[in-house]
Length: 256
Length: 253
Image 1 (tube, chains in turn cyan, orange):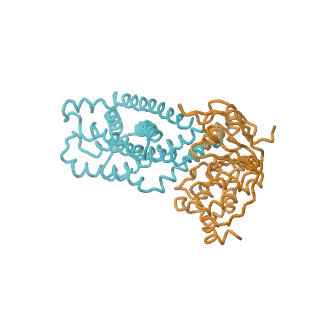
Image 2 (tube, rainbow over the protein chains, first blue to last red):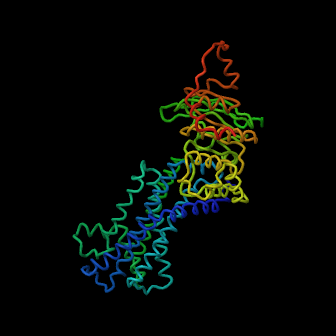
Image 3 (cartoon, each protein chain N blue to C red):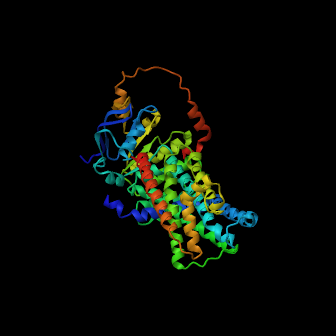
């Protein structure tokens, strides 16, 4: 065991390098992950935005946190896809019969998800800046935003891992992310929840996306974040823990 | 004791109600080519997976290169390489990148050099910087085997290395396997093709209904049958021979 533990990080580095190459060589995934949320942002700001009453002057500021979450939710479906393909193609069998830490292969995918989502988040924020997004947040607030987004990515990535490891078909591996992409629409990401009918509103106010969106929005606009950040963190950590346990169980079942 | 690369005693494995292995025993000598013959679903792949530490057995013991597979899986993995039934290559990477990746994972000093040497040896130098998705079936298989040779493992498992390959490529793979054994590597291969076992193996074991029902050299196995009668038959070339004769002039050099 010791021999492989010592190499865990270098092994994981090799795995990360591998799947990052996959990402950059399939430009369609990069485009889908960043262009679609950007298009959505353009649509909401320049087409629908005029009719949406948020009580804020700058709708880009209001919209950005939700757009970032949508980007992450669609980004992780590719993690599920890549994981599924690896299980199918026998390359994991090769890795597992080699003297490397077995979980390095899985962690390589998780790290790749973090890095690639971070890239698309940065690109989207740059586009938002061009569209008039302004933030009064200081360094600490930005770090807090980065932390929440990273935690959200990790939590969803482990959900993606469950799907990728246990799906029976490629379509199955990718399909689970659609509900995740839609969650932000039934939250305060695009419009204030006050405008929704009571049942929808109750759902919107108690699902994870709303608290995460509110926390990020408050941090970016330099407002006091209040309870939202703790609720957001609790959601992220809770989902992360549960998804991690189930993903590892699925992984062990597959690689017993 | 160290003359055996593999030693298997009473190996058992069941999938729910299905008893695939019901007590398998055999030994593989160091540096030899051992062929495990069996029909589809006989459990050949299950044996390979257990010996390569991908699967746990339900009973019995097995030692690979002197290491017990249950208590020393890490040491087993250190000394073996597996080429599974489906080419375990990364399609999006190039051939060179695939080899470098494996060399890095085996923590070798000079991954680039290792990759170059193997590319050269397997005639893949020209295709080295192309993505594997553009490779033909034969090239893919060659790369697959080359990846298994990174780090010079003492024992290599080839699970049905030629299934689904055309005859030309099959002969190419055979050549590689023979070279490996000449270099001192132990080769454990499974196959459904009798001819393949006949061509390559020092010892042949036949797996049937969960047990090894015959095990020996080709000569020994032939002795199990009544002595050959001399009969005169007109030799007709098989379609495979015709096919190879027409397209395979280059094999003769």
